[in-house]
Amino acid sequence: MISAQSPEVINFLDLTPEEFHKAIQELGQSKFRATQILDWVYDKNIYDFQEMLNLSKDLRTLLKQRFRLFLPKVIESFKSADGSVKFLLELWDNSRIEMILMPSEKSATLCISSQVGCSRKCKFCATGKLGLTRNLLTSEIIGQILLARKYIKNRKLTNVVFMGMGEPLDNYENVVQAVRIMTHEKAINLSSRKITISTSGVIPKIKLLANEDIKVKLAVSLNAVIDSKRNEIMPINKIFPLADLKKTLLDFRHSTAYKVTYEYVMIKKFNIGNDDVRALLKFLGDQSCKLNLIAWNPVEGLDYEAPNEKEIEEFKAKLAQLQCPIIQRDSRGNDINGACGQLAGKNIERKEGDHGKY
Ligand code: SF4
Image 1 (tube, rainbow, N blue to C red):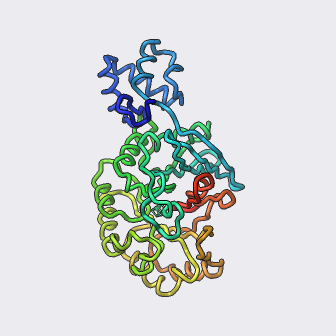
Image 2: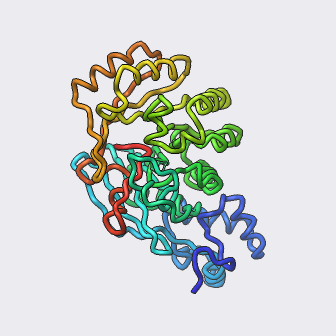
Image 3: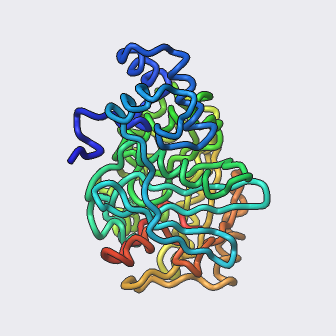
């Protein structure tokens, strides 16, 4: 059987429009034909070459032989009371991932996965507990977006966030290639301002990203600003400690137009005390950034607790002297296990990846 990774077939959705033009010209076809095919896929949402009726039958057969074009399979979807929809998706090798769609009246934000599992072992995250199965192909990242577009029909997909399963910067090349396709005017045509990559802090890849021709927004899962505490919940901090991370992010900020967003999950009796406030004021005080606060979302098997409203308000009040905008985000989709990873875990093992909780 030919798999999605067999050398004799090319995954159409792995290619930028320029790369597809080149591939089609190597088959003796014109650029015009390549444009027609790109239109079918990205404008008309047709993913079967046989349905591309303005192409000759011979060309459709040739395309079928040389290219694979398919989207992940939706296994289950769950709608939350707040309108968020969580999709459990199956890939060509039966691996499972998830994505969360958060529609509003006219638009929608999509949270996508970048890996099956994750190797970073953040303590608060069950995806991390499973370890890494594999990186997603570019086509599997793009496939999530195309599936979401089919689902929202007349609404516009306005924002894409890499906050689902996996550390996106550990799948750097495929993620960057996906961003190229996402922002290409002949493909998905999203503004790079509307794309956010969320990372646990993979310094060498943040440096690489700063020098790419694509400029996307960066969110950093911070969660503690005292090294010993961050080491405890995010082992990546032992490799890339806070001082180095901060320096890298200051440099990143200078090379892009966008402020870095810090994500801070508030955990009772762990990271919202006075020592944490002092450390946060010092860490963020000289940065042009944004801070998102999210109350801990209970995770089965972990005995952390969410702070109550009074504790959250007190913590926020102590941070008020920061110049940066501070936003408290809701955990959207709580009633469908909205923290990334939980749904995929239901059919394999329990997983709760989370660069961001909704
Ligand atoms: S929080 Fe992100 S980086 Fe950490 S283990 Fe989970 S998916 Fe991986």
